[in-house]
Image 1 (spheres, helix red, strand yellow):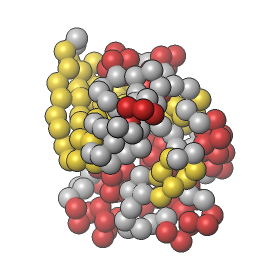
Image 2 (tube, helix red, strand yellow):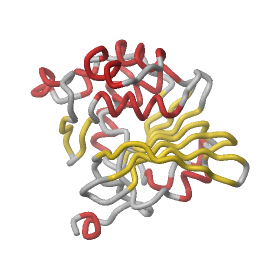
Image 3 (cartoon, rainbow, N blue to C red):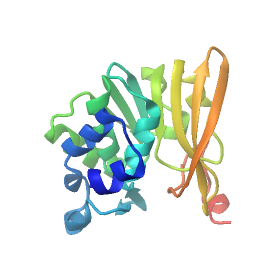
Image 4 (cartoon, rainbow, N blue to C red):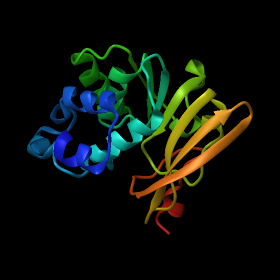
Length: 209
């Protein structure tokens, strides 16, 4: 998976590549789909959510530029796979999931694998997770209509936010960075994610237009 799907597409961050080799992706997907866990695409995990394509996980993680001592926030725990990758690369990971069932399943898998620096929370991720802010890096694994202001506010000085922004038919991966009270942004590749729900996310009606 790492050699053929990720390295060949230009991901060069050695720490990210090593983390992807270490984390057993198949334990984060339903048992009936474990034979497909390492294929080049997303997979359904229940509650109308997916585990992202391995390359997208690698790309978004590499864009965070983690060095090992960061406090990281993930919005959209899903299966817990992305959080496991972050757990290897950062000091502390807080991850927020809207669906209690997915949060509980992910927490159990992460605990069974020994990723005790990951803290799973149930809540509206579009509002971030204020109790553990500020964050050196924030990653959002669902498409937002625009960058939620609470997430920008919860970034630390020099912190980076990676988020897909756009409507249901196509989104753009954006990278935001905080410098004092100013924010700079860059646009990366087109992507396709499930919608971000919550106060600063998409409503069902808006998403389906």
